Amino acid sequence: MATQKPLRILHCFRSPVGGIFRHVRDLVEEHSKAGHQVGILCDSSTGGDYEDSLFDDIRPYLSLGLTRVPIRRSISPSDLATMWDTYKKIKSLRPDVLHGHGAKGGVLARLAGSALRVNRYRVARLYTAHGGSLHYSRSSLSGQFVLRMERLQEYFTDALVFICEYERDTYARKVGKPRTKTRLIYNGIAERDFEPIPTRSDAVHFIYVGMLRDLKGPDLFVDAFAKTERLLGRPLSALMIGDGPDRDRYREMMVERGLGKRIGMLPAMRVHEAFSMAQNLVVPSRAEAMPYIVLEGLGAGKTIIASRVGGIPEVLGADSPALVEAGNSDDLARVMAETLSTPDWHAKTMPKPEAVKAVFSSAVMARDVLKLYHELVDPAAGRAMPAAP
Image 1 (spheres, rainbow, N blue to C red):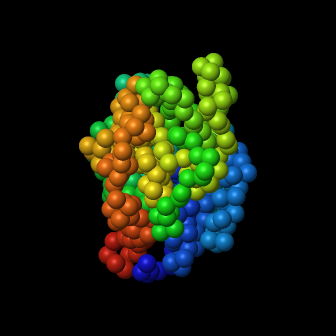
Image 2: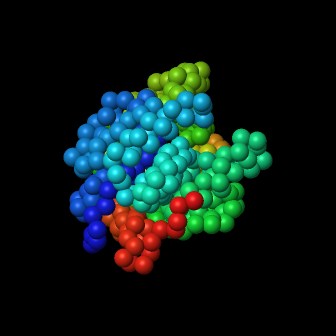
Image 3: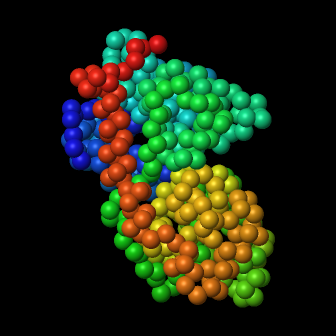
């Protein structure tokens, strides 16, 4: 990756779990290897041993360190104290780039960056939604508030980065046509992630990997699993792998339906380990932006069955037979049954690995993000940032 002026880059986000955390880790590694100084600021109250191990992986690349402060999911009066504490920590790191990810990360990065600019400190302020606030409906009062806040924050934003066409189009529809610089840069996975992972001898028929919360559809997975058994007329096996606030409720759901011995539950683990446990990966989300689990599954040679939501059709293909109607367990069960009963279903439906790699590569993602950073911070290139508000 070609470099210009070495940059000091700080990524701000709330929760170090899921796709946002994966996205930031890839950018940290790629940009550090390219000679830039990179740091992370995120919540101190979420994540566990698994997430700690992921931080350990990237710690050698964090020359600006790992800063953790309490960041609540919902808006509260304590946010004012958090903002002041965050501002002081950010100021001490002297970043050239503040990149906020997700709604809370976007607020912290843009407000802290704007406060620095008022004090004549030049810093680029970027925001990537990763779905987040864009999942809200304009018809609800909470949605109107959140989306209006997104519009207001454009005045404190130097660039919006969209991770898929769906996110870009949804922003324009719900928030409005952006009044600042924008860039479409797809999520990507590393070269090492494009290696087939064989299944174990004791593999199950289906796995779900992700957060255990209704937005991601674990309840739909359980319901569709039972219906798939009825369609095929035989018992099947599955695993749900992940952590989340609704884990106990899903366990109770399985026990009540007599599925407790055929659907196992395991805590969050590295995806390469999870992928060895089944060939068929089910992504039953009710809403998404551009989920990494789909890219990771394809890179590992897995068969994907996924809801037609967010940017997933941009990966699998708009007309892919692997896509199902969001929230419809009957449609999900139909496709799950087809994957087990149709010869060569994987070869007929999954995109070729080389086609995925050409578009959804972390090296390409990091290169394009870095190019945008330089456009915003390099006055010598004639692309100086606009005056502070």
